[in-house]
View (cartoon, helix red, strand yellow):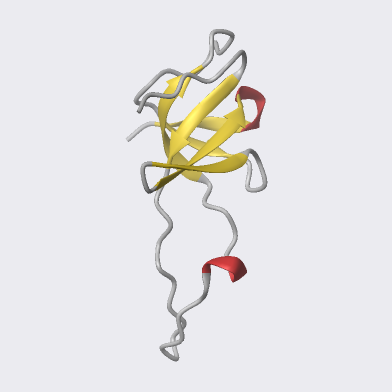
Amino acid sequence: MKFKPLKDRVFISYTEEVEKTPGGIYVPDTAKEKPQRGKVEAVGTEVKEVKVGDEVMFDRYAGSKVKMNGTEYLIVKEEDILGIVEE
């Protein structure tokens, strides 16, 4: 299934790491904060600064989570992207 965001939206894939405290307790998903780094999978027609394949950092509380084909993605506005990660 393909997804094409509209206007200034960016479709981002990310992975949530399993968190474990030093005492061995696993932190449930509901207690964790959203990830802040992901890979751009698709962009809307009005997106100017990022492109598909870029790894980006985004605002912690930005966007909406969606689940497609068993994988979670994030849809954010371009203005919520803080920058492109270059390694």
